[in-house]
Image (cartoon, rainbow, N blue to C red; front, side, top):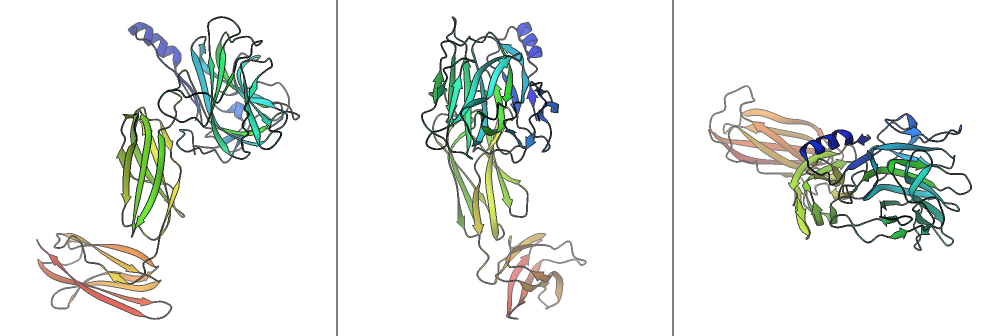
Length: 439
């Protein structure tokens, strides 16, 4: 959901304590609203146009960009060509220094060229406009302008339709008149210092902004405007506080039997706290299965690993949730692992052994079978029956607790036996192993 800084309170506290404010995170918007919600009724968004067309509405799915904090959260908004636009206040008036906005954008069509994201003040003064126009050969070009007057700059490189890009636009207040600068960064490498911009616009005839205090989503006319999906908006007064993600240089998986070895490396880190490892099977939702402490601050490559042990057969997806010290987080790309079904019947040795009071018994079945697993004492008397059911092919683990049965077991040697019958062929498998209860 939208989060706005309580700027006035912060400034009052700052003045009272004589501590300077170095940066401000001004706006976060992940469009985590129900599909079909009209944007100008969401939180503090408001419709700018007085026309009777449909205003911006929430669409699905949301956008995804590896490592970006707004990735895979909520839904998105689709910018059409109906002439409507919406704005949101930043909660503070920016009159000097720099101000940035970042977002994930996915262009599905483009025309002669128009802008769709921008800063502003009031309802008429617009700055740092982000444009899209159709490339004469293929794809489209991004463009920027300082203000409302031509010329503005377009990229010479063309970009692909239906692909998500991370963009950052910077407005730099510069002393003097008609000389403020606007920069565009496309798919910037996060971490470290601000990179060289992809594109720079210095519109010599556009007026400089005196104040920037609003952010706009703008839909133009049907003859010029692109159709763009927008998600994960961030606005800040510094590059470091956008925020941008930990720079992961790799994230891979490797199978070792039933273990999935996850390995990843970061190129740089800043303010990083930890990595949560999340797993998802085809039937389940994402779940957290472990965590690894991050380096906090690093300008050199760091290596990390995690082993997901003894998992059942099936296809799994993994991702990293990268959490910063301030609580903000981002997701990595998703990788997959396919754990095969067992090739043979097997009854494994219990562990721990000797045990008190509980131990774990693992067994594998390669095909759907009727399974019976029982425990006996030295006299051949059945102590308990742990399994008596039909089970699908896979890897199984059963806990045997000597205190959970309706008899007092003394220290000594016990046996556990598995009998398996193939449901299709009728083939039987049996195996017996010894275990020791030591009180």
